[in-house]
Length: 114
Length: 113
Image (cartoon, rainbow over all chains, first blue to last red; front, top):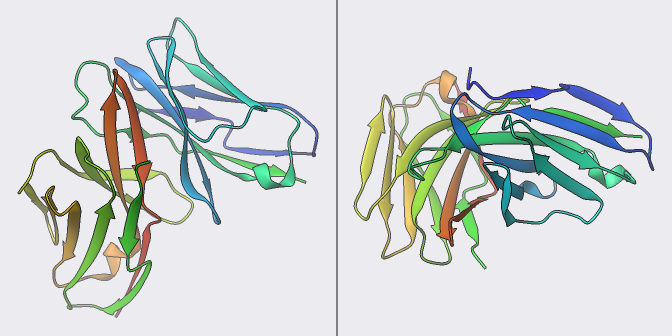
């Protein structure tokens, strides 16, 4: 168990809808990262938050947004969903002081858009 | 732009054999990671390589890093079925305090009895 908790595990929704994925990082970790994993694109970095502030953006669509709250949990909001958004979405966390520790991944949320 | 390429992408091998997975990256990086993923599961950290010449070993897996060649290898010794999984390397850069981790495509390893 990595200590990173993601909810829900599975999500099935229709095109055009909006969903929110939730992530609780490991205790003490200040950084939260979101990744999208799909068969055709592989693992794509979406966004990185550190202690409530956005630090880096990757291939995140404008329809997607994220935030990290004061208690350090994070939410990824996906709106105007398209079939191509179906994927496994991972949250990962890491220690805030040293960059030398690996990212610890949650079990992911599998999103299916129908 | 930082790019990470692994080869091979698919590898089927017999138990007891040795093999190597290669990970090339395009620009100077601060560190390199190897992860394992079982089907439908999360990513499990295997190794963190921090400097040129770094070598780490855990059981039948050994990872090394050559920063001059921008190459990391994951060597599998005397493979066993339990090592069947997808292996990812990932490279990151720290720019103004922001960490961006870029993954390779993954190598799907199947070990046959």
